[in-house]
Length: 369
Image 1: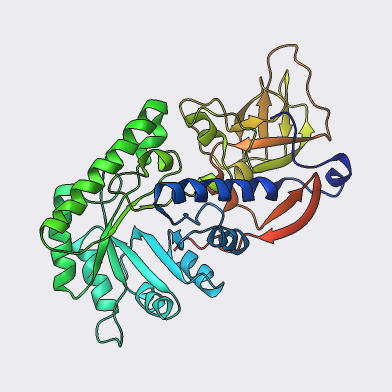
Image 2 (image 1 turned 120 degrees about the vertical axis):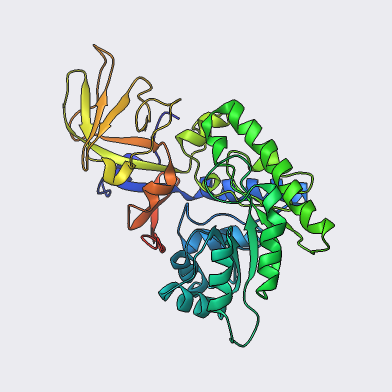
């Protein structure tokens, strides 16, 4: 990628820093993932924590997604109110206090499924719906396949299922997130295999016990295409909708089809052989990876490294003697990890053919609980 999404006339309308999406690229990415999963016979339930946008969610559903995955009740409320009627909260909720009442109201307006990984979580959901007319939402057991974050190991799935059934809850299946696939290129491939084998083991323990649990759900953009096979019935990638620097590196791809960039203005010469932009940590976030230098790629400046981010300053270094953009010039940055970037801004600037064609709100911004 050697340039940004807007022509010179459109740049004159832009106030930086701005998160800009190319809608044709977004649509192409949505269509490509949907086609891949359709060809595999695997359902697609994208994770909306990446885009937090009703407009993008509707495009995903129109392309064939069976519903959405969300991380929080707050995200689910936004998408249910926006007409998305099949939602999975892929998080081990502890539905106590205000969350219990919010969950009850949410279940009245969409088909809802909830992640669990503990007896405490099971008890909280059962208590939240005790005595309520109509069935409680189905639950899905989270399996730790190597990410060592949340979930139970495959041999712990049956005990949790028994506990859920004893509380009157319906167990729909198992799910996982192979977060260790972000560790590097070999790790990505290994994590996808972990998803398939770990989920299969957990699901088979339910089937052998006579528990009908048809859902076997994997979830991670780096591993989605690799793990969409065998017993896996559903994939839940999120970042694929835009792409980012980290995803491109892991998949050994160029940034050429990335659908989201940050437009930012050079505000200072800064350090020797470098420059400073008006996109700092409050736009680019602070995610880094051991295999990537700095906090993003400066498009068209392959030797530039965003060495440091303060709240409103991005400090960029260049090799000695390099040319550098003029103060006042707009440059484009592909962020390392797009998900936290989206949650830091109020809107997307929507581009098509080099022009600004719309502005979309980040509808579920800040809905973190």
